[in-house]
Length: 127
Image 1 (cartoon, one colour):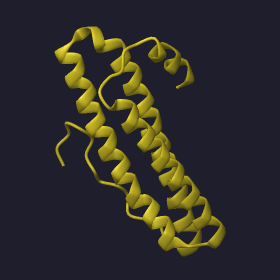
Image 2 (image 1 turned 90 degrees about the vertical axis):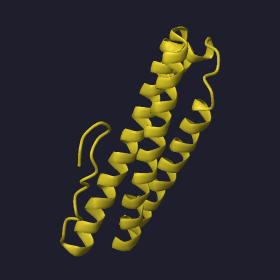
Image 3 (image 1 turned 45 degrees about the horizontal axis):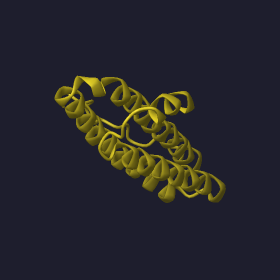
Image 4 (image 1 turned 180 degrees about the vertical axis):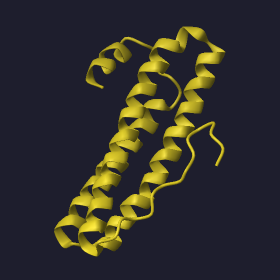
């Protein structure tokens, strides 16, 4: 992500993408703090809330992806910075998935049961 920001520093701003990415990163950091608290406190309910918050991160990512795609279609000169922003956003979204995995393990630790696996289809897939 840091390497990509060097390239982005030399590019023009793309809509509100950086604001969206900062929000996603902040929310993932809060999820991590809550997942770690849930682990320390052995709190399955708190861990479940972390899992639910990952859906918000996924929605933010999908909205940002569509926004970046629109920018690239409208002006192909924006393709390089948009792709860098997309990969940064994907990294942040993936961090949210890892935090969700921590929360799932907390639930298993506390209850002995694995939480129901996410059946949300990927973009473009049918449910």
